[in-house]
Length: 464
Image (cartoon, rainbow, N blue to C red; front, side, top):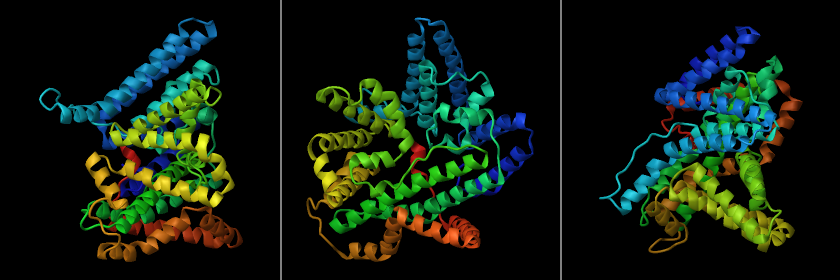
């Protein structure tokens, strides 16, 4: 069940909101937990057992680690290690065994079979939340949750269960214990949700439909211009797809009294690669900084160790997204770019912001092609088209067709990926508040109409 499905919008969400509002305070967490488990089981009922197992084991480990800390037990490091290892093993088995076996099978088909294990939706997100909880309990920055229902709600809460944002326990601990749903807060939640729907349905889906067609072209049919149009389309698609989902998740959280952290801050206006990653998937960046980069020593080490730390963090960031070699290359690509920026060109880019912004955008667009093409064959073919390697024309009739048919969407996509349009609309809505509600209702209805006719409605980050 996805947020932009009719089942969710007109059956699941209205029923859950109504039951939640009418239920007594002491039952609200249980109601929300039941709804979350139903939401998860709707698409993958067999994987609900894995989630319940994860909840139970991490709940027990959290209690044990806190007891160890209180008694200053020497076992607390070992217990934390066992807990983290268990989570990593579960994530590794379900996320990487299939991909690794497939890769090895292509090299040694007679010796190594393909092991097919279905990837549970959202496992990367809820596993990272569980690990952050255990480490924070170990560090003493938060107390272990004694109430199993409250802990299960933290892990399984449906607004951010499938694709984030990755929420640290200490950020929502008080809200899980006690929160209030107000008319104003519910209204803000609706605004966030509609904004996310517009991004997803009116931008990401349309951008993605065109990119899929371009990606399927052969070298003869395509051209350098066509390939770059496709790369820019995908760059915009993945932003609107993922930030749209995050906005919807944040909005749903507000409807139930939760305040989830911001996950995107106009990443395509970044003036450096470092700045880009402060704006893109911010909760994932925070997780790796707090639980991997800083424990490794961060940047307060020798140059060689700092380079090592960056490569480790970005290699892990890449494989977090999937077992494919393209994801590892994508992560290491950013690790190398950040090293170059830090030690070679960072000062120059800071002084020349236009060059810095241009360099960042080009690097990001190229990086997304590593992300989008999951096989070496498709990746090599697409890069050959982008950079004119082989018999690839610069511009042809196909390029003209895609330029004509996508130019309006491209221009609007670029404009709305900057704060300009948001600031302009907010000024108008503040000045004419009655227009605000009417515009949002119109946009919601427009999204519904689009969903009725669209057949392309994936969430790209569901596979992570």
